[in-house]
Length: 201
Ligand code: HEC
Image (cartoon, rainbow, N blue to C red; front, side, top):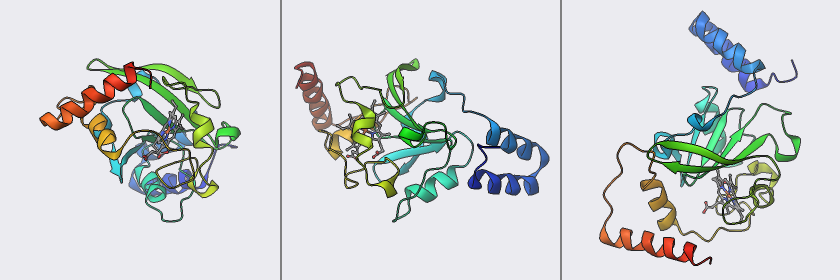
């Protein structure tokens, strides 16, 4: 039972009191590796917002993920945790011991469209995003207590996207059923971003 870990044990106990079928599901997830495919990922705003980013948990333990995300002292994200800042990049936490180098995080680079997500690139220490940046190389710079989550002040090399732009990318996720209408100013900002990316800067 190498993969059994404390939060899953406690969730198993909780679900035992809640009912047999949930208990079975929880015990299964304790032993299982995560099955992740393009369909795993959908509209970013359907996840739970934490400050500027979004979280979820594929093993049903969103509370445990939120507890770490909201902790002022950091902590280790529980297995099943999904974290997204922009629609095209995701981190998913596997059960303990799955990938020691990345502290069990898997990195994903997605292509997103109204039809859904497709996985462009996935893996551990060697995933590179569409701008040539290695996910792990930046995220490993976060101080240990932040478990590779960078935010703006955990010690990582910054990304060249302002809060405004990040919010706009979240608002315009093409996988969402409905997106808010943008103001003329917002549309202008997005256009400028697209042009600067095409210019290779
Ligand atoms: C140049 C360094 C760099 C590269 C390369 C990079 N990131 Fe990040 N990433 C950051 C920083 C810094 C933040 C926080 C930005 C903010 O909150 O303004 C961040 C935020 C995130 C977040 C939200 C949680 C957090 O850590 O704050 C996720 C998820 C994420 N990146 C995934 C990825 C994935 C997946 C890749 C590769 C496909 C990648 N990143 C590549 C630096 C990088």
